[in-house]
Length: 263
Image 1: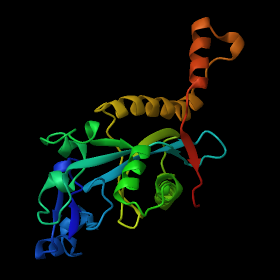
Image 2 (image 1 turned 30 degrees about the vertical axis):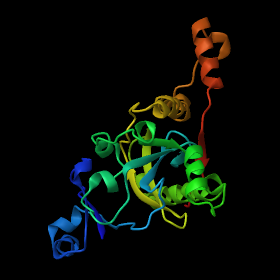
Image 3 (image 1 turned 120 degrees about the vertical axis):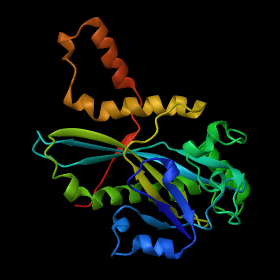
Image 4 (image 1 turned 180 degrees about the horizontal axis):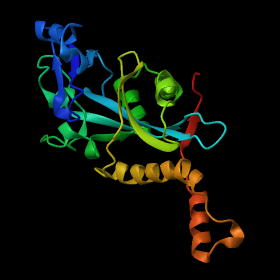
């Protein structure tokens, strides 16, 4: 089966899951215009499951570039917290057209009748996910999430950014940053696979978990990128209100860590 997505439209409705057919072969043919518009991925038929249901992991990567400095290379930061997005239906390959079973994106799940039935907003923290693994897969390493999967996700994220460095650093923009949403799935043998990178990740407060995580993420994004370009006044030149805000920012928990890129 192929996991097919049309690039010329950003809507989640353009994702299709289908068996390899003459139509798919036509799309990927080098002799057709359509081959330029459609990435096609092999469908992960045997993913790791949460209570028998499909899931993926949304992570965040921040890119920052300041060409006004001597070291004008892109820096990459990985946010040290993520969340799991679940489907509400039991996983099955009997009907690959069942989007509520196979697609965990909020745009699909929020419209389903079972949204929020098992988890608030169909979301789990990494710690909650580890708890489900301990119950669903009793023979698995009890620390497999943070001990094995999470480090590999960081490595793959750095590798993906490294692959595009030459092209990205050609930009004529002198100062910029971008927050990216990385989506990973996990195979039945606990191997993370990068599914896609989103240049405009969802930042909605769709559940209590995200109502906490997203504001912290946005704050850390500005601290790591914008605040470096627009530093506050020196301590002696600050007003009382300015000094209070600066101290609040300094005390904030910034979960971004810089990743080493291959150059």
